[in-house]
Image (tube, rainbow, N blue to C red; front, side, top):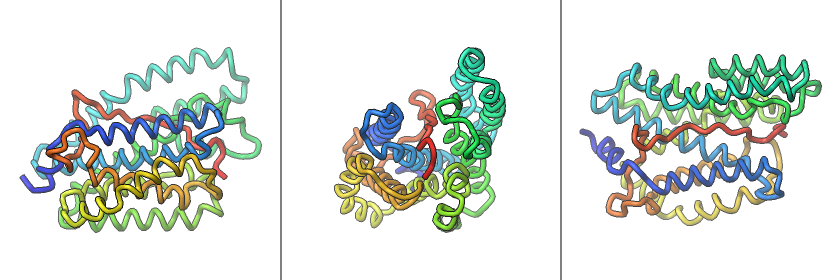
Length: 300
């Protein structure tokens, strides 16, 4: 087994990653409850994207290195973990919608259901955005956009790692992250809603997590993470409570993503201090279920 694979498999339940996931969920829920704070709680979505990229990349990477990875098992486990709860949510939403929504909102909902079932809800919701479209509160499945975003990344990532040589994994991920970030920054002022919803302009957030999974075994990277840990932790806790300006995702999203991966790479908050750099991988006994978020109601 390679060093990185060994490191990746050391600790199956890192409390620091669980805490980051909890922080991400709490920020988004409180933000959308409109309680006044955190002012930029939508940044929780960006935190969760990094976590997802880190965990799923570590899982696929380790499986390939150990010779145990198969597409069938990978997607079966994702489906078993995600689809039952998702389908119950969709069914309840469909049954309740006629008593709550008007004709146009019901028409939009049918497209949202189709998008949710095909993991293209982010594309559907992008198409439903606009001046003459209904309010976000009248889109019951608006929250599944980020789940679709993640699943699209999950479709592409394993194939990429299987098809290209291992020596190119890190370089390819760096190129993807840079290309996606540049595209995001180039389009954010011109096409802000498309930039918000679509994978090509959001893949860099997941790719930052993927880079963390590739770099965690490198001592020099851990040394840098140790030095940046406290500034990153302060940023993670404070930035969502600041009223960040500009369109999203922008510089605040980039900062929160970098801070998230630094905290993960440092690993000092992990439960097992004798193995501080273990990666919490997806396991059947402790699932890291994807959680979908709404994000800002109207990207601006």
